[in-house]
Length: 329
Ligand code: CO
Ligand code: ZN
Image: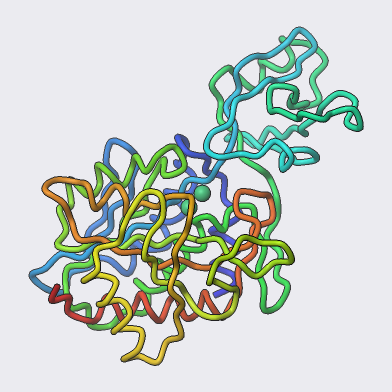
């Protein structure tokens, strides 16, 4: 599965320009689903038939990035964040644009920067004049971090585990599911990092009986981390709450039961800050029962997000089992 993960996590796709990752995922899942369509927000909605109820799985395919706000006379690009970007994580990064144009993030007098903010930084794409830069990049173009996937054996590192690892898990589950217990809507959502936007409209049009988001979550297992009962390697997490959602208790119980019945290790997750597509799904229409399976991830929203391979494989098993088990509420 590592080949699939590498392909999916390395792809370009900042929130608002998910075309390349959508095309990649379309090619990967088409052979395993009955219908596939793209809606006006760019969500990719794949259907695998299996029963009268509708179960929606949502994994966001967008990643955090930057948007170009200004090109100066020397060809340097100024930018604004797309999603939650901490200034300290940007230095030394390389930014790639849709056409492959690449630049480096720079900043004046690094040692003297006490209050580092993104508006003190610029992107240098190797141009010397405004005209030269504008031949490659225009105001409003979206950039994403450029960084290769690294396989450390048990641990895997990428700039976009959030939430491409969830996309890879959903793709793998669609490939391996044999007997779905409901109509499975696998939705690869857009603009999650901008406020769960894609999932909101996708859930409205799909109108599922239950929605389960797949994403990453923080951990409490690094030297001075927050107190949090989630660690790498102890299995996927069944979310109880985050800032966007209090998961529907019946859905959480269903997920726990399916994990137990299939001998899949899992952890319970209470995330203090952060959100997921389930927050949008749950508040769509008259309210949709919603839950979340999270893959524990260190260094979220940096160029080197780290997950555990066993958690990923257990995640695939759990999603497959959820697809094959009737949700009775
Ligand atoms: Co995120
Ligand atoms: Zn995410």
